[in-house]
Image 1 (cartoon, rainbow, N blue to C red):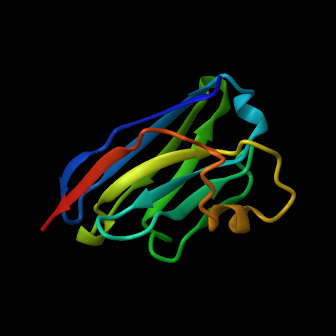
Image 2: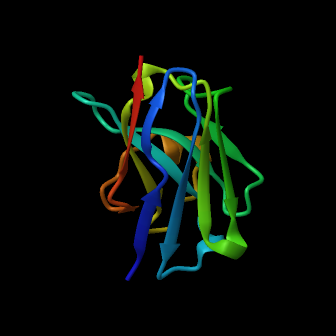
Length: 130
């Protein structure tokens, strides 16, 4: 059974930084691309950053590009999201998502699709106060 768990959320002031972590078990971690999605209050879930299985390719949504950095440590079965220059509009629940099946398309295409069939963590709350 695949289990995904995020950590690292919290309350931060505008301009501050946070690092989110995600661990996944029950799968061959280094085999899968994966990503970070978020859901802000009153809005739909959206993919914001994804990374290939070995970390050689990344995707960022325009809203976070240049401020967020995704990375992974396959030896530790851990995915990271380094968030800097945080804005109030970054306030959201952040989810780590692992595919439930292989995907032959572009990483960006997978990242832009919200698919409940994938494995989602329980989410971690990030609140940016002004």
